[in-house]
Figure 1 (tube, rainbow, N blue to C red):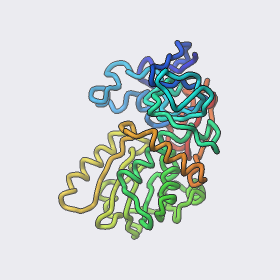
Figure 2 (spheres, rainbow, N blue to C red):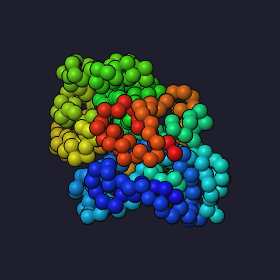
Figure 3 (cartoon, rainbow, N blue to C red):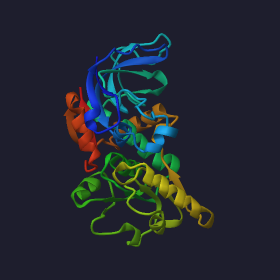
Figure 4 (cartoon, one colour):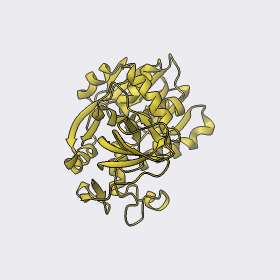
Length: 327
């Protein structure tokens, strides 16, 4: 089968299109023919070996990448199943959040991590969902504990995670304020934002309203500034930094935790790669998607052979919604 293989850290040019062996599913695994995948900051961080500390403590490989084929999102059709698999059979349409393997024609996924694809989505649309929507769900529901009627602000509302966060917060009954650039104001309003703030013209931390939950996807404001925008018992949930950088949000969390003994506000960091219920989360998302309460936003689609170009484009950090690859 064809796959883009990562042999060393570096720019998108290090992704090499190779012919490799098709994987064989273990007893509890499903072999899936990949029909579409998408690009996440997770992918290009691993490609570049960032942050460098993760090479030591994160298990991604000190000198060479541990993960040979990137791609955390996948939508496709079941090709074969292991002998212990009972839920799926060849031909079923499925999707999943992966640790690796999406940038290939086939991938093996544990049955416990695989979910049926939403019936009202194409493979391309479904491939835009797994990691970004799961991250938004974890930030709002699990870490943010969002409740109906609460005021929620999403900073970085036009990106992959942000577009899902706006829709999910609205679906959970919250009053949503979306922060984005001028060109994406209409987009976030169309997704259900009650108010849209242009960060190039206004600073939401000084605007006046106070929020019960602040989802910081862009990482463009300091913890102290974000606390000013919260109610006295509000929650600040951090997802990524500027351009998706990982070290910046860690600095945010550590500095915020230092203030925690003195204020009742909560601080949390979302790490979707450590999610223990990916299948259950995808099934919850599927229910909302099939009710038309959540819809993936796709900025641009690339063919499989242009995955390096797709990664380079997504790494620029300006894509509204997701960047999808078709096979």
